[in-house]
Amino acid sequence: MELTNLIFEKAPIALVTVNRPKALNALNVRVVEELAQVLRDVRHDPAVRAMIITGAGDRAFVAGADIAAMTEMSTVEGLEFCRLGHRVMQSMEELPIPIIAAVNGFALGGGLELAMACDMIVASDKARFGQPEINLALIPGFGGTQRLPRRIGHPRARQLILTGDMIDARTALEWGLINQVVAPDQLLPAARQLAEKIASKSPITVREAKAALIAAATMTEDAGLKLEQQAFGVCFASADRVEGTRAFVEKRDPKWQGK
Ligand code: DAK
Image (cartoon, rainbow, N blue to C red; front, top):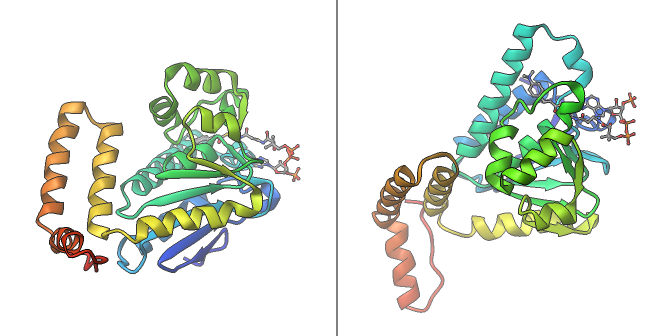
């Protein structure tokens, strides 16, 4: 499928830009399908070590699902869209490489859900966050009712989802929703710096750490602790673990093989 709504720059630090600035980068079926395609592509390419997602223009990351497109949808089409969205958010969460959301403006509704499916969120000081679906007689449909309370706790998640109010980047940082706030011109450099730092680690270890961290958000503590033991075992059995520990003892930089 030709990408018409996303700009995809494939590189060791891949960059995906949602490119519908006139509609504040709102997510329609096509955008979500294109995202699914990009994820399939990077998943099987060991040269890609991290990914950054951002929005085109200076107003929005993603202002939600495309409301105009939704008015045309039948119930069945709406449900299909919801399922497609859930599949894509889950594949982002399960992607073996880290994804950083670089939030350059509004991250609302499906836009905040997209950002929350990433591993970390870096925001410009102009960014605004919210789940305003309630104003449309909807509730979050791409995982927001589950991911938001896990990230910021129940009282604040209820406040955002039940009032539809937006919060600014400083409040989002204070609430633990995002990792960093920077000036708009520093957004992509800051996201890239974070991505490069993670990409400099052993890819096998990054993959296992990410899997264990996802378990912390999705499983019971007991199941998560078991998964951590398996993930630790995979790391310990790797050639990179031998190299990492040897390099430390020999006082040199490690050379990762990803094995
Ligand atoms: N969809 C489509 N177009 C949008 C849009 C959106 N979400 N948000 C903005 N736009 C368009 C506007 O219609 C306008 O288009 P033109 O009139 O210029 O053609 C253009 O972007 C600029 O927007 P504004 O003129 O409104 O700009 P302002 O600065 O005045 O306001 C705003 C910016 C972000 C505060 C405002 O645009 C706004 O409130 N936008 C809607 C935000 C929102 O409610 N987002 C949540 C969408 S609901 C589902 C699964 C998931 C979901 C739903 C269903 N399935 C089960 C089917 C998720 C739902 C959502 O995300």
